[in-house]
Image (tube, rainbow, N blue to C red; front, side, top):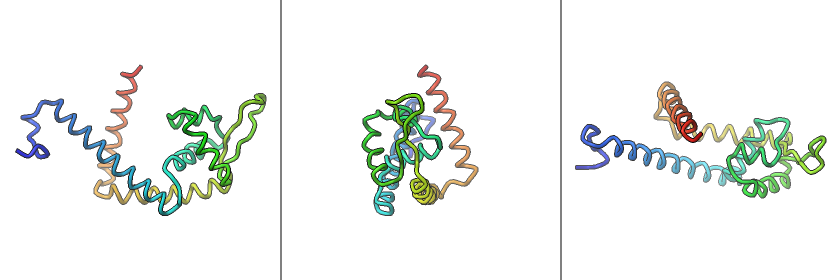
Length: 158
């Protein structure tokens, strides 16, 4: 019997869910690898850099480093080097936090916003091409189901 074509009615539910998880993981890794390659080739950039710029674009007033790390769900150390390089490239600036001489806000520059808009449009096109086999209705349904899963997992974690 080919296990990739197993009959769900003969498998324990846990096996089917494990298989589902492995397919999620494989698909996610494949998509991420392609995004990394496309960013490297087309923009001489990286996915972590793209993620930092995406986060900062959502917060026009800027974010403290600790807030940025929280939004990205990574450590401050992981973000510092990326922020340094983005600042060197003129994509972001650090500005003092009013009333707190030790804290700095990180903000996108106009140049950074323009560059991110170009990369984000390409990113959307790449994702659209990779997920072309999903109809809009299927994509919406799957996204809703995954959101429900995430909500359930968050509730259980609390």
